[in-house]
Length: 211
Image 1 (cartoon, rainbow, N blue to C red):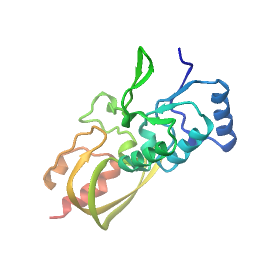
Image 2: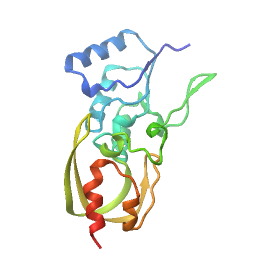
Image 3: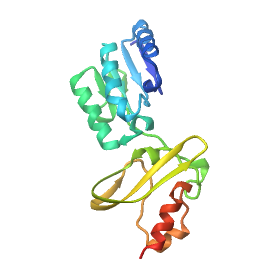
Image 4: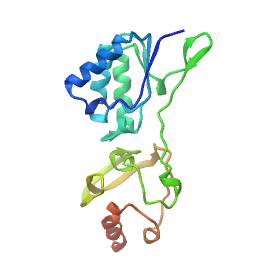
């Protein structure tokens, strides 16, 4: 039976250089034959660099998937592209979402996929509670011609202050939801009947004024 180290939600971007060194050394000292990482490794701007550090620190096979925080401050498409680039340069790293099932033993296989759910306090359709994912991830995969800025908003939530920049875009093709969320086109007038997070209030008011 293989000696496996299972790690998850390690959030390496929050560690100091010394804390990171100790973390990598402690895992290596356990002498795992395989390392499994269950997502939330870092945030998008730091993820590729942290994966390169993992590849340098541990020489055994490392299998991983990504969690929601790995896409924060980036796009799903670009993050996955960057991850596959790192894995191509470090063959002992395997991004399970892009891989076939891995045989660990003759009787045990390993597969994995990126994924998370937003239950929204049990009221998915009407709850005003939303994960930060919808603010911090470019969750729609679509090509667009970006035009002028319509509105800039700063909004304070209890846990953080966010700054939103709304711009006019002309879509090229159909937007494709990347997080399993529902999406539909509605007439402008119908916006007044729908519920949105408070940070969107000014944008909705602006859209309703326009004809």
